Length: 406
Image (cartoon, rainbow, N blue to C red; front, top):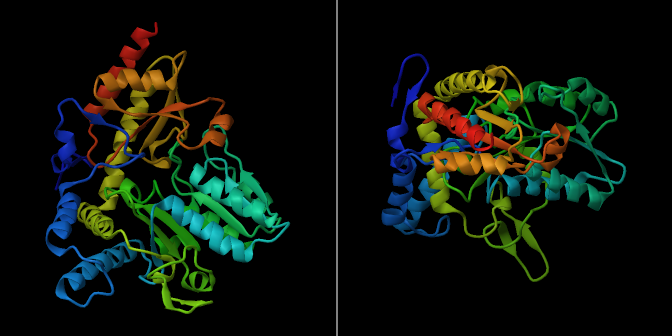
């Protein structure tokens, strides 16, 4: 893995799917492409070490277990968590539901307040809607300003009401805004609130130190961080996880079962009912190792340079409106925009004809779309393998869009 001039990276050759001629994959916020290191790690497990984990004592099962738990250890150490506090789920959505249903069921009461932000993904909004409806609690939202950043003064006003929990996205999947989660967690804790952070977009893009952030819960997903689908990760404070009731019941999450009651396994098994996503965990571990070898700081610098370049080029295009912070250093590798007089789906379809892969729609953030005053946007999102030439390909495609709808 080598760096080009400045902070640019040259890793495109490590992604087999990118060998397709003319392909500009600018949809990494939806799902990342997978480097060979991840593909080969999963292939090796399935070819040479496949077995059910944890209970088998024969060598094959021990090998599979070691690789599975080794991936957990790697993920926990990378972000500053511990093995006991690192729970595997189906995806980030399930991780948030786990907290909302388990912690929420045990702690939310009628009249309590849960505070979220206007830039949350549906995966952060809907679980807390359900939890609040069940408990008779209230939901409130921190607004955003004209540049797509949180109004922290409004957060302080809501904190004066003594909320039970504050939920915030680390990096917006629409606006690209990098939120000051460490400061938000500090303010929320001072007001007596628990804090959950959605780090789905942050983990593959920016350095994350869970000890510094000091949230009570932090969730992310493997498939947006160069790993496979089917695996989410919840990092939670050990004392909270130990006090929370199980989210799902079944095999593996128990220490013993009788006819009328059961006793739970120790963390993190208590929240991992059923057969685990073994190959997916191994792939996630390989993805973490790949990111570590490349360097998350280098990825951040590379993507920030691309975002600055893309913002400059889009700013010179008449009729293109970009949403989110104007400065690249205040946003992640996501740019959502609208083209005057053209529906976002038409923009994406025409770009797709030229090999440019972008996302169009509400991006699972319908309330935010209402705040922005649009039904949908077109979104381009970058990764470690993205190049300036692909940004140029995007801009050229947008010129064709304007010609078609002139």
